[in-house]
Image (cartoon, rainbow, N blue to C red):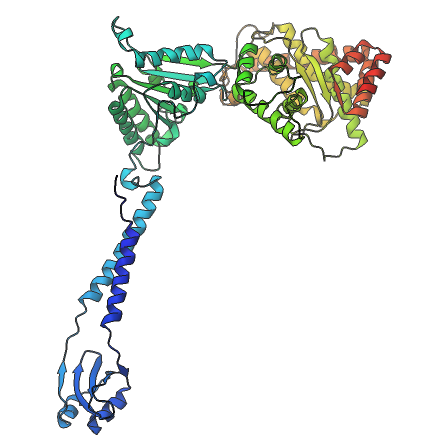
Length: 609
């Protein structure tokens, strides 16, 4: 058993206590008298002897009332004192006071306190005992062995291809002779790329849980600190640890924080990061994969990684994680509802079909929100209605129950959402509306129309994109028809419609006037929100004007088509807007009754709601 080190604070306290105790014990009880009284005692013959110091005089009384009593008097400038003592026959002696201890303590004690404070601050900066400033170049990798992460491949669903790739890596670590006998080499590095929430880090934790080898895990941002050279030192230390623990796996999360393309920053603004990246490239070339050291990394921005990092011999294998399809979403839901008590009306297949585009993290959040909603209502199990409410909350935002809308604005919102729903229902290639609401949600949404696709789609034809364009403009045109004016509520719809029309013209080659040339580079497929960072391709002024005219043409033609549809369906549009004014929420059965034009069925649906 290792002995615990003695804290430096204990040593300082003991030293100070010893000095105070010594000063108390060595101090004799004396009477302090004024210098005038001291002179008077000399003349009266009451002083037996004296000891003269630089600034003090110690004496012993000869008086019969106080024999042997000690006294103290502080000196003043008195050149005749020695003559008076000799005349009074008082024995006296001089003594030079030794101040070396005081001088040493005046330097030693502050120095000890300074060192103690510095050691405490360094320990706090270093993140723990023994990790101070002297250890700043040490790697912060956390070592997991066997199943310490608590996650295995049984907890990962919807990414079967990625699991197979990583299982091959694990099989090499467990049975290297199976591959080496044929002369094969395991990839040095495996890069996992995918959109946020698709399970990149979860896969790495599952590898740690499945592998019977050490697993070194850290983030790319942990390499770079405020001190120059620290990142490179930590990279060297990380690979040195890995060589000692081989066979093992190194996992670097958020690799883009470390591996961004070099040379883009001016005036050496990122010299420290580039130096760290250079050291990583050197270490990846230097370590021997036959010993069983494998580098695993994850990122959602592969397009900004340095090309030297992605070449064969470094990250030989790249595993792309896409958002799961309907079957993958069903498997992910099965994983997340294991510990959830579900009601008899919950259909996971239907729930998977309602969540296109949801990643694994989104589905986990959906299950959790439904569980919390059921718990708030005191339910014994999580029902289908709880999942519906959780889905609305995730898609449209939190319901604003306290926001009061005046009747005029409520009527505008009802007409707007009714226009979206009617156009979506009457377009054959558009997703059908399943729920229309004018309850305010989120930051600025006064209502929303939720559509559900019948199947997962990976390719869209021009006719389908035009139908989607019509649905986006349905709300604005419905306001013009029913309200006689337009409002600011269509701002988001107009923005999305403009973006869609621009992509049709500049990316998809769906404009005969512009042709097949593309004028915008492809955005990051995993982070579409970063499309503004993608520079537009250069084009002439004439082509730019042509693009603007084509975008305007697509929007105007869509507006005309929607106007024709809504004017023909005006009775249906008005009935749906009136029903929204009364109930605020209209579900699919009511929508089907309205679209079918059956007044009797509509009245029955309202009575049973």
